[in-house]
View 1 (spheres, rainbow, N blue to C red):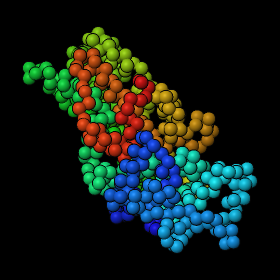
View 2 (view 1 turned 90 degrees about the horizontal axis):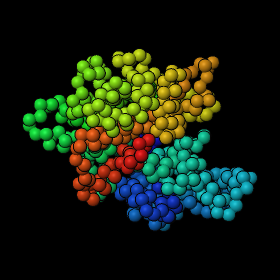
View 3 (view 1 turned 180 degrees about the vertical axis):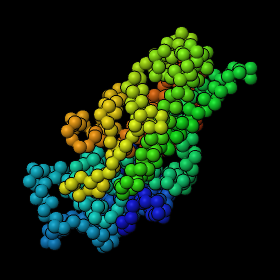
Length: 467
C-alpha cells in the first residue's frame, strides 16, 4: 500500500487508496444511496481511485472484497481477510485488550459488536496505509473521523470523501462524473457550478437585452459578466486553499493559502461593488447624487437611500441587513487597499502526536467581525474554523486563531449566496423577467454530481440568512 500523500504535486500518478464500509453502505436508501452509487461508479471508472469493499457483498459490484474475520482467542488476534480465499491481509493484535476496553465501558449486545467491528476495521485501515475509510455510518465518523479527538484513522462520510476525490481530480484537470468513463474539465466544472450557484445574474442579462441596441449603458453588460467571473474566482480561491491544506503544513503551504485568501476578500468586495454599480446604472443613480463614485457601494447608507428613491427598494433594504458581512469584509481587506490584511502561522501542538497545523492569526476586531458574521449567517463559529471566544485572551501570546480551509469554504459560500440574493432582488426592482430552469434531467444530474465533487451540493438549494 502506498504511503505517499496523493495531494503532493510531485505524485501525479498516485491514486487515492480507499476502503468502502460495505456494512453501512448496504443498508442506506434515498438520496444517501444515490450519493453512494455515484461514489461506487467513480471507484469503478476513475483511475484516480484504488478501492476495496470491507464487509457486505451487497455493494461490491466487482470491486475486491475483504471481510473482518471472527476473533481467534488462541492467537489473540482478529484478521482482515479476502473473501473466497484464505489470504489474510492483516489484523489487530492483541485483540483481547480491545474486548476488555469495551467491556469496561459497559457495552453489550449490538453496541458491543458494533464497537469491536469498527475497532478492527478502522485500525486495520490505518495500519495498512490506506488513505480513506468511507462509511455511511454517522456514529463511525463521529467516533473515528477527523474531528474526533486524537483520531488518525482517516474516516470520512460519503459526502466528505466525494469532496476529497473531487479536489484530487481537479488537481489533474480531469473530472470523472460517474457515468461510465465520461469525464469533464476544470473549465466546465467551474462554469456550470458558478451558473448554478448564482443563477439570478441571467435575469439582469435578459433585462439588459430587452432594452435593445438603443441602450447606451454598454458597461452594464460588462458588469453583469464580471459578476460571473468573480464567482468563479472565489470558487478557485477555495480550491487553492484546499490544495495546500491537504499537504503537509509548513510556511510554504501557509503562504499559498494566505495568497488565495488575500485575493478572495477583495474579490468578494468587488463582486458586491459590481452589483452596486449595475444598480446605479440601471436605476439612474448618478455619482453626484451620492457625492462621489467611491460612495456607490451597497455598504453605504447614502447610496442605499438613493437606490430607494429611484425604485430600488428591495435591494436597498436587503443590503442594509448585511451589516455584519460588510463589517467583516472591511476588517479583512487586503493591505494594498486598506489597513493590515490576513496573517497566519504554523505550529505543532505538544503532546498530540499530530503534525504541523496552519492557522490565520486575527486581531481582536477582525475576530469579532468574523464571529458576528457567523451568527448573522446562522452558523456556529467552529463551522467557520474560528477559535471559541472564551479562548481569546489579551494576556495570551497568540491572537485569535482561524482555520483557513474551513473559513474559506464558509466565507465564499456565504458571499455567493448573498450576492445572488441581492441580484435577484435588484432584478425584481427592475421588473426583469423570471427565469425557468431549462436544464434537462441529465444536466440537472450533472450539476448535482459536480456539486458533490465541489462540496457545494447543499448550496445548490436555498439556504442561509435570507431564507
